[in-house]
Image: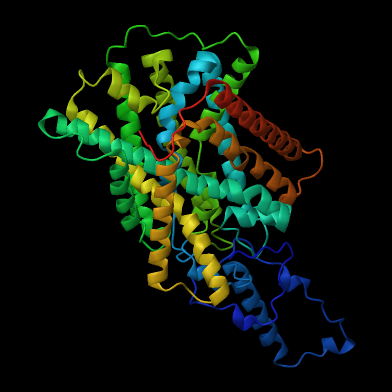
Length: 514
């Protein structure tokens, strides 16, 4: 549990500071608590130094310097060492890059050309570029806010929100969007992974075997069982290798998808004219829905604090330095995946891009006969592997929250059997939702609108509340402008998505995944 205390703690017992049992207790900046202790007024007798005065003074000064350099002047919370996110704090810039890539690229990228069908070439590229720069800036804000208060590390998005906006308002603003992003993304990954497993089976098997041997629900079961077994890895640092595999497969299938689409013959009837209707309201809502798809493509902000929380930190070596290095490296790669996907996919298919599945469905629909089955099979397999690995990092905050409830009541770590049971329970719950509500994958615009404040608005407002920049300064104006614009845009996107759903409709069918 993170300590949310805007005032610096006063350490009354220095012996508590030297705890070597928990690697999770570090701080980026020294606490001013030592200097804030009232000093005793000097007496005329102070000039009469005893022989022991000078060595004692030097020892105290050396000890204070050591504590300041190590940055251990912080409150100790043993609960952090019991929870999956902060259980291990031996992460580094490489781990941060792996996790950021795995959480930053996903099936949402496959839907980007769909946004261009409404926005067109110019506004599509402008919107995608502005969204990329904006969300990269808010990532930097979150990384700096991780240790904004001396003696405290905010290793969870919700804790930072509560520190910035207060207990009640912070939970109202951040609890639902962050849990929705974590749990909702896991549900979407089950749908994507299960349906892609079915496509992979059709591609490999072809006409030589019974392609209807398993239903869609049964493929979901196969995916969930695999994801649940993999989720038994104990903490966020332990899945660094899993995230590396997920990052490699994500970059590979993104590159394969847009490369195959661009290099093959375009289907007849491709048009680049933006989709318009006779109703101005429907046109506006269509544009907002397209912006929601772009916003939905940039994910992972709800995990950046958790990833940074896995790193050691001290005054001389704050965790923000390796974290920012990992993020910069990963987002260079993300840019080389998302922009070619959006631009190349729209060039290849134009307005013919399928609304369900995006680029993956277009590749299967238009180029199945002229593309090698080996390449198509590998592309589908990479999507499945990436979905499996992404499931782990997005489920980790849910596991952390479930174990937090237990450790708070029992004042001790979860036994292994309970931790295993909680993760199996979450896998079953996510599977049930994916089967019961299969139309959720058609709500990309709505999901993007709901999640947009977490990515583009809250970090700016948190910076103002915690850092308190000088009024009317450049940072003050920039963050107020972006924060307000982000909140207004979120409301508009949600309204536009709901209007589009009401007017155009979506195929709603319960317990009947297609």
